[in-house]
Image (cartoon, rainbow, N blue to C red; front, top):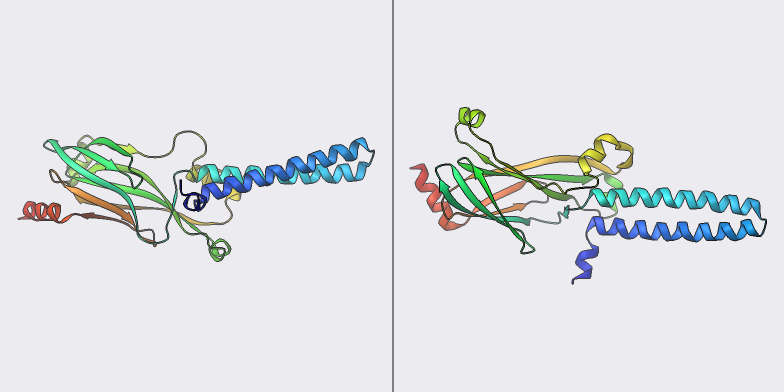
Length: 228
């Protein structure tokens, strides 16, 4: 396991901070208990205040870290997902999605093209000066029809990649904006390309937050043939 890479993930760092703050809270609580038994009421009261403060900070750090699950750093253009397409019937496709860690998933979509969307988070200046990079999370993939009327009337297919359970960053930002004071912007980024049988596509994210989809050479040639 590459611990250096693991510890570079924003969520992991926040969990580590939360654990350290919780340890401080427990230490302060133990000290307060000793002061109380020793009838040092003022010191016991101060220890109680410190305990509550450390607990609030630990909870805030843990909540933010939990909401950042699934997000990845944007330090340069990074691969997001590879897509291999196979046609099932006219405007019906089977897509094999392969993530950079080697995990994969097969989904079916309807339409003439695929569209990938991601959520990107950027930090305010103090966090940027501290070295916090933008992060992203793959949000969904869906089928797209070339004809706008068909887009309105034909069956739609949308595959959601939001993490199940717990807090979601967008919900947390809307409901508790004060808990995310260092967040400058949360915005969506998307890209789409026509689907061809046996097509292979690479989707990546640029540091600016722009999502980019590229076909390989053989797929690009088949796409050109469709346009003739």
